[in-house]
Image (cartoon, rainbow, N blue to C red; front, side):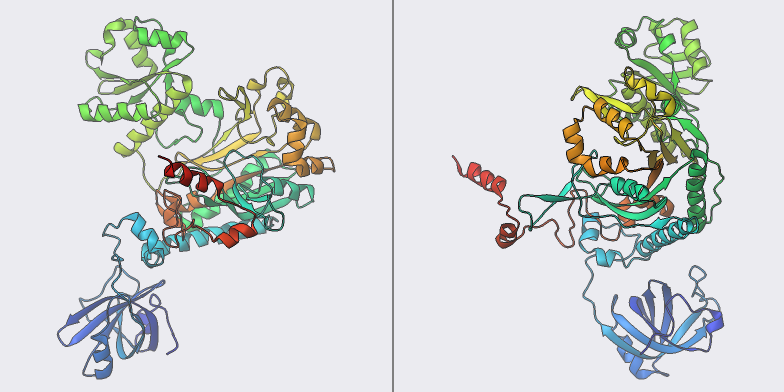
Amino acid sequence: MKRTHTCGQLDEKSVGKKVVLNGWIATRRDHGSLTFVDVRDRYGTTQVVFNPETAKKAHETASGLKNEFVVSIQGKVAKRPNGTENPKIPTGQIEVIADAVEILNESEALPFPLDSRIPVNEDTRLKYRYLDLRKPEMQKNLIARHRVVKTVRDYFDALGFIEIETPVLAKSTPEGARDYLVPSRVHAGKFFALPQSPQLFKQLSMVAGFDRYMQIAKCFRDEDLRADRQPEFTQIDLEMSFPEKEEFFSIMEGMAKVVWKAALNIGVKTPFPRMTFDEAMSRFGSDKPDIRFGMEISDISEEAAKGSFEVFKNILKAGGKVKGINASGCAGFSKSQLKTLEETAKIYKAKGLVTAKISKDGVESQVSKFFDKKILDAIAKKLDAKEGDLLLIVAGHEKVVSDSLSALRLHLRDELKLVKPDDFKFVWITDFPMFEWSEEEQRWNAMHHPFTSPRKEDIHLLDKSPEKAKAMAYDLAVNGVELGGGSFRIHSPELQSKIFDILKISKADAQAKFGFLLDALRFGAPPHGGIAFGLDRLAAMLTGNESIREVIAFPKNKACVSLMDEAPSSVSAKQLKELSIRLDVEEDLIEKKAKP
């Protein structure tokens, strides 16, 4: 029987129509002589009634139906009897009175129920992902992701961007994480690398004269996983020639505007506020701040230095900082709540957490005895504290202090329910440092990547004070999440060479790793810049999911394993021989284990 309608299509206007539905049995209910089944497909669910008086054979077949059987049902649409309507679903006003049913395929009992209210171990879900994806909420997630991608493509197409596919098999170039390597059979001992990003190729597209590039790009990084990481992920990747900062930001804000409207029917107000990296770190301790609520960080190093608390004094002498936040109205927190706050700070390497309650008598803390009342009042004033507030103070290296207080802000945001889930606040973070110092390597590293351009006014700092140079780099953050990051690129061969010198990348190494890009810069490369948005994170945010695995069809688990198809897996000796590969490491391990 040829399907005439989907299981989410019929309504009161369809009453009286002869229809054929194809789908899966979601439930079966026997009510006396009548049998009711709900038939489901990705469009919705329709109730079907089997009556032995009008369709005896179909009723007999229906008595043997089980959940997840695949069926084709023919019947006539009828209005549901008064009082039996289901207003929660689009088809809840009608039902189909069946006159024929065909079982297209049977199903064994599922390893887990497809009811989202029943918790299921994630590894089990991933092992049977094709079943997990039958859940309406999972299908809704992937459909929402599809809508985002279509909206993005249409938006940029209308602005003259063209989608250019860049290579998946490319040269290994250092980009901050380990490459996934692909051995070449034709060129024994040589390897392709899966791209960590299309960075170099999109820059080459600018040199080639394609002034507006975009791509929904697959990227690969061999790094430790967590909820928001996967070994393969997807970027909305963009690059423009002759970019002007205001036009560039406006175009990207426009993308966010149309995506939020299409996905959530939420209007996004533009232009987005902007904040320098230094300001973001000072006020929020994070370069991706959640600006939906206050609880901003205050530096109380000057006040702390006036007391006799040796812990603070020693940290300040060593060049550290003392900073705090005001948890407004939280003076009544229990000992267990305070302990949780301290443990949260310690995750980010804080040695401890100083707490102070504001009572009618003033500041009450375990360290109050080390400060006279005037200093305590000054600290309270700096943190804008009033009676009933709780002050949280961390001392240490500036990064530790920032990371700890930022984490405490977000912890309190969630515990106190300070924000609404449908409230989205965007902010551009600009003027990142060009470089960050590596104590381990005793050299400068690029904070973004080595092709990021410094601000024009900071080029003179590169020779003697590179630590003061700011980059033409920017991130777009929303609700404490980095949605995308990018920069204006270096298009001058001379400036690129200077940056490599600062990074201690020799001319030989630069030519070996990036020679094709450096050659291209010598042939009339235009000024250009771009950005990449994380599609997986964007889709997760728009669907209200914490983990990006919920918006990826076939993800890996936290151990970087695909439980469904058991990848990665061993390969045959013949395949290894064709690739000129021998597993010496594995053989060495076997030999070591064999020795007494």
